[in-house]
Image 1 (cartoon, rainbow, N blue to C red):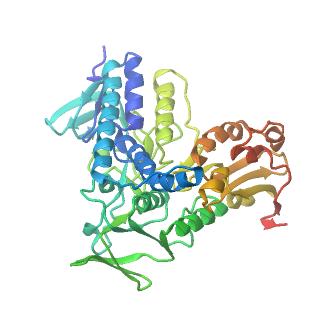
Image 2: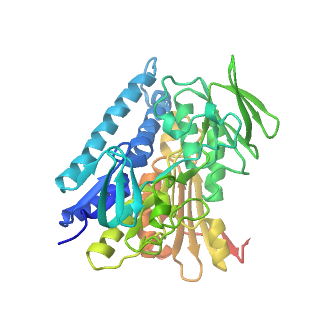
Image 3: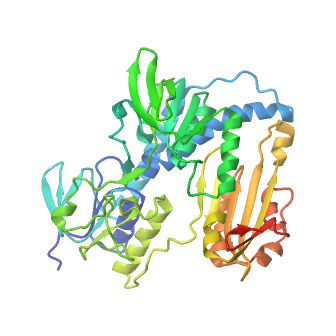
Length: 461
């Protein structure tokens, strides 16, 4: 009989932690899990899910306009921010209930409290002060928005967390950052009628994405009326009678109702007892793990954003399942972080999997680039000038498709499906002999027969 209170104790009730706890419990292990806020973690409670609901809400302003081109008279429309918040909160509460129900059905013991490590096998539950022991511990405490404490006036700003709970919809907003969170919220607020400005220190938004898509999205956002300031940062934020006064490094002065900082996320590792347990972290505060998600302490594992490997919900869930295989099924399994499909729910969307043109050019001596840019069918009657971009990156040596990138409606849905052939190592010939579905935008992916250009030794030819 085990001398520990639990076979497994999970600190953190996000997607990775809940999956690991639920599956371990379903295997007959005695499992405890602690979460200080709400079960579901960043994604469900204050991230991907409410963000996507906001994206849908923000698209209706264009849908109403587009309807006229198809013969509809939509009439006057109004938007009620409070109704959206109320509906969003109701859905999030429903989803949290499902997470709890799954744990409960698997017979995991749920603790609604902050938890911290006392040593390698002991956890303190702060609400009661009680300590429990576990043979194996998983830390899955996720990440938290970077509050940019060095910025004068940072306390006047909001992060993505607060954006989901604003009492009133601002008339104007300045969003700092160029990553997917900043870009998505810029499109959300603009679609809801907010005068929106995005400020980013880099030369172009979305630094890790393919250059064609970055430029295409930038142009589309500015065409909609979103102001984008690159090569600039916020120097100071002060409160005035007119609102928030912002001074930038390039000596621009803006007055807005709200300033949102979307300057990355940091691992949530402070004050959870890692040092007491001997768990090592790196210079960014992320828990250091080996290829099996094991920390410097053999019985302590870490999953998801707290390790700062790949900050995506499906990755955390995948890491949890690999943990289960490794620890409880005698099948050591490394998480696979290669060729992960991903999407930016901007407007238009970005969907991508594999290498960008820039990355591929550094790895392979010769590439074939297949690129199509066109006006989608829906835009022909709606009157919109937006363009879709589709791009395939092919290694000329073996003809494998090593990257696929889309800008346009439903790009995220397409990226999920493209992830399968790219992960499977399909060649351009496999794409070419696949019959097109007509009329669709995605048929371009299987009808681009001739390279748009080639790249040899990093140079376009």
